[in-house]
Length: 162
Length: 173
Ligand code: SF4
Image (cartoon, rainbow over all chains, first blue to last red; front, side, top):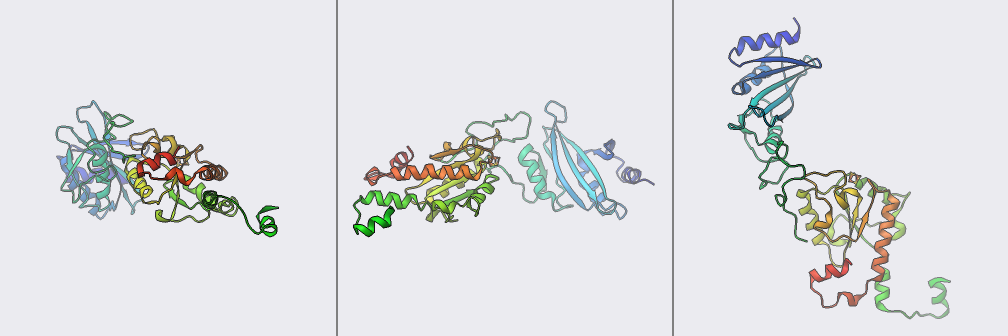
């Protein structure tokens, strides 16, 4: 059986309520699901002995500005066993701007989630240390959101006195 | 000709102490290499045997601000970094000079964005701006020569009875 079919079959049988949606882009499988299942699905993909997605390459987000579910959180995970990359996506709405952390599954995603929080303001529940990672801690805005002006908000980042 | 000939024939030299100090000072500028990004590579190249900044008496790059009198800010200064740059500048003893090396440092360069300071003159007094992305090492040497000329014009009376902020103004005009 092809690996893509194997993954979807396994997920279907283990998470029937996760609202799984599949798409393919340039030969890569994208799987979208309900954000409540993010932790359990990630844990499953990592620990299943036939899949072993041991590496979390990136956690980031997309801001769709006017869409109903404003943000999509995107995970790129990689199986060293199969040399196979998988893209996971979960929608997050602005009214409840949070999603569970996967830093308990992949340690690397700790800082990647901090970056996503810093840039988009998406909170990661149960994250061990959710602080800003690039911007100063007292900064109040989220720079990669579509409504943030390119040149920033004057006075929001203080300069030293001349 | 030259100094040796003069000393040989007369055995003494009449000048002003001020001039001697300025002459010594301008030929032994200690740069503080504030290398923040890619421009720093060209700054290093200026110190290598090919361009040889030692010809101008500035080969002693000190990595502590307390021994330096010229800060070469080479690289993109972000808002977060600006506080560090200012702090290091303040640790340098007076009199001191600043070269803004490269497009980024002078104007923000190609980084027209919220995180990059659009020109370090917003928080530092700059003496020489250096064009280029990155500027060639010979361009940096040119900037150093400009600074040397400026130091040569500086006289002790310019600094008399002045408080620190006023000093900065005088020194950077
Ligand atoms: S001016 Fe160019 S070379 Fe210099 S720091 Fe900026 S981007 Fe890098």
